[in-house]
Amino acid sequence: MAAKTDNFQSPDYFNVDELLTEEHKLIRESVRNYVKKEISPIIEDYAQRAEFPLQIVKQLGDLGCFGPTVPEQYGGGGLDYISYGLMMQELERGDSGVRSTASVQGSLVMFPIYQYGSEEQRNKFLPKLATGEWLGCFGLTEPNHGSDPGGMLTTIKDAGDNVILNGAKMWISNAPFAQVAVVWAKDESGEICGVIVERGMEGFSTPATHGKWSLRASATGELVFDNVKVPKANILPNVKGLKGPLGCLTKARYGIAWGAIGAAMDCYDIALNYAKERVQFGRPIAGFQLQQKKLAEMVTEITKAQLLNWRLGVLMNEGKVTPQQVSMAKRNACEVATNITRDARQILGGMGITGEYPVMRHMMNLESVITYEGTHDIHLLITGMDVTGLNAFK
Image 1 (cartoon, one colour):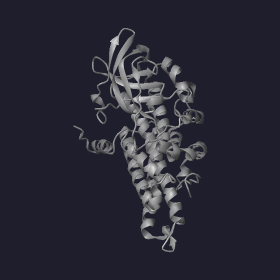
Image 2 (cartoon, helix red, strand yellow):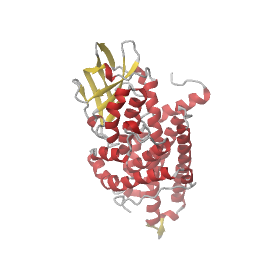
Image 3 (cartoon, rainbow, N blue to C red):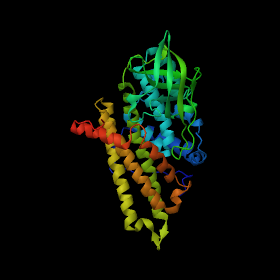
Image 4 (tube, rainbow, N blue to C red):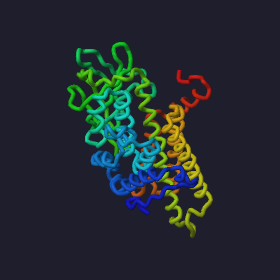
């Protein structure tokens, strides 16, 4: 069952679907059908060539995958967070890079403009980002500051009606094709501010990152600011300090918690079907104990993560979620998915490393997903600090 024909069936061992509304299931079905029709047939080729399928930006906009929780008056979907999670799950089932494109646009670009921006900024940027007419990116990580973003060196200096922006950001999803960048920089008092940088501003460039073994179908680049003159009207007025970017990351990590499990579900489904069809020693390998152990553990971990994500979505909808709960779910999903892709690769044997199946692509993609927006270790320490009250970061 080659992956070119996408016969994916979602595992639901504990009838989690009964916890979803009809609207949730319709939204999931529409995104799943989109992935089967538009992503699965092309994604291996784009990943092999390390090329971003630019046509998906408009498609994702049309589908409502950009900023689905943003109010409809600004072009968003006005949907709840379980709907958003299900969208991310289905997109990452297709490819982590496709989900990254949507996650960045919705959680890291549209969310801060909606949450921290002025009414003028919301009306100017959000509708075009929602439709995919504009693609956005989020500039926080720097060459020398990843897990410790508070040490950033990017600065803005007052210049009358403008500020002058200097510095660099790296590992930025969507950067090479983005029209808009939400960038975090320190002002002259050392306080962190958000500024909206637009393509075409003099001194602003976005060189692409090449040579990636992971997220090969996603566009990654740097943001370079050489005395970029940014109007003060582009500063996000309603937030100061690290809580601004960290608030965005909480929303994005929520999407990753759902998304990574989508990749895990894809690998489990592929491995299960392969094991039932692949005959060795006179019978399907699914009949051997060690293969059953792998498959049983896969579906167990997927089921636990589905329940964790659903509960997290309920808490998000009720406004009761903590960033620490989101951290736990992000780390759990990434760890579970990483282990499942590796076991699936073993079940497929040599076929597992080929582009005929999506398993190796998922495995390589998840090596980025487990690192970005908080590494595995950092999220462990966030949980550790939450339960002990003791800070192990410093």
